[in-house]
Image 1 (cartoon, rainbow, N blue to C red):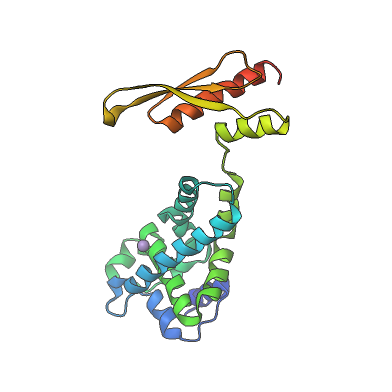
Image 2: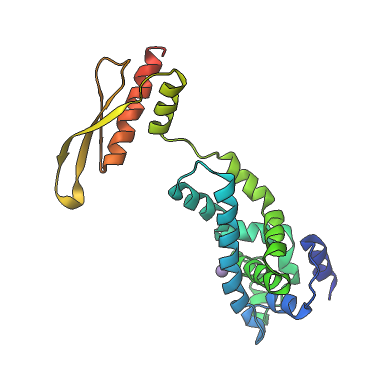
Length: 227
Ligand code: MN
């Protein structure tokens, strides 16, 4: 292997038992047969799975939609390409002449796909545990960034926690009006909190949205009152 290739392997920090897998993972389809597309297919799923598993454990309070958004940040093309660049993966790639001339070594799509293929290759070479270690190490910085954007708690949860902390009764929500055609409904919800004189009113395209809006107002009024 050439020097840039060796440098890449040092950064990767994983030694392949079967070097033909490594070879294949680094071969772009422009370089001919034996290319990495099937490994990419496999690795794409594995990265999705490992990041899902990680977020599931690390974010016990996050709802499904929030977990989905966090994972999307980790597995999107530019994140994968950034991880590949930290490894100098581009220099180790085998590309056809056309791709070489047009800057393929530094193209996001080629780098991201090759990183996926590499993860697929590590999985085939030594199984899920090694693969998980590798992905968590390679993505450590990106994972930390995502974790810092600590999933903001929604208004209903904050209101409930605030009242519970003071030993007060929980808020109650009541749908007081539903308007509009089925595909274009508008819900109006009252939120009643014992220490607020009047219910707060929230409007939204779903019951949940209306409740969140009403809870936000209740929180604001509690803030104003210094509760
Ligand atoms: Mn891909």
